[in-house]
Amino acid sequence: MDEELYNAFATPVTPITFARNTMLENETGTMQKPPKLMNIEEFKGWGGRFENWVHANYLDAWECVETKYVRPMNDDEEPVPIKDLSADARKKYKDEKMMLSLLQQAVKEDIMVLVQHNGTSYSIWKALRSKFRGSEEMVKSKKSLLKKEFDLFRGLKNESTREIIERYCNLLANMKTLSIEKTNEELIEKLADALPYETWGTYLMILRNKKGFNNLTLSKFIEKIEAQEMEQRKVIRMKDFDGEQDIGLYYKSGVNEKSSNLSPKIETAYSVKNSSESSSKGSSSKTSFTSFPSFDPNISATKNGKKL
Image (cartoon, rainbow, N blue to C red; front, side):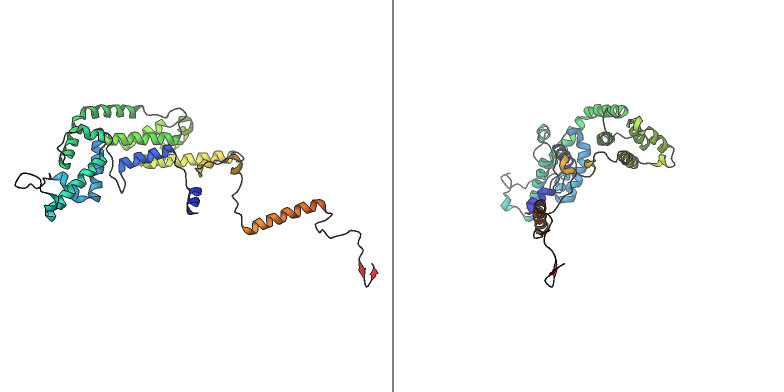
């Protein structure tokens, strides 16, 4: 019963939504797994997120990255068996293995294959940094391309305002990863210029002339755009009040045309009984003179045995 109730009200997850959630988890990590390095070019931004995640969850393990771990050796120059390790040596061994496990989870396999290391977490981290520095020419080329893309950014044909903003924010996220900086004024002006002039020209002109516009941050500017878009939708709805419902504004599940005009009804034993009774009464009223089946129109009233 509980499972049926959950399935009835659970919002279906589309493939696009699932892909976006997966990308977000890879970028920021979760409580159970660290952020994932998908491309060596992203090492600079990923490295800080990964370090913070490990510090918050496995601080002792991070020491193995800062200080090279060396396993104790016996007189025959062989590793001391784990069962013979002291409590302190066993803890350091466990921290090293934990750090190795986290790196294996966080670094994409094809990247790990390309870096040269001796199997310790210290050497892997060092090799990743060296690999990133070795690809600086590639990073430099990508930075140049992103700068050009920023200069050319504009809304595409049939692209909604929300889609323009989402694409713009993704561009800024990539620029931030490569340490490409723009002033707040440049960020706002570029987004404003990318919005369709036919829809936003008048509003943006009014907004620019308002006091405090120069002090707006990009996030505040986007909030104003989203609020104005909602107001525009409301005005359109009021002008076309008898039009079709915009169900997608508040309800994500699919609704067919017939059921969209019906209110949900909950049947109870009482309502079912009344429904059956009203049905039987309706059928009887078609075959009798009145709703009282025993009434005879030819019967005369009497009082004390005398006809009235």
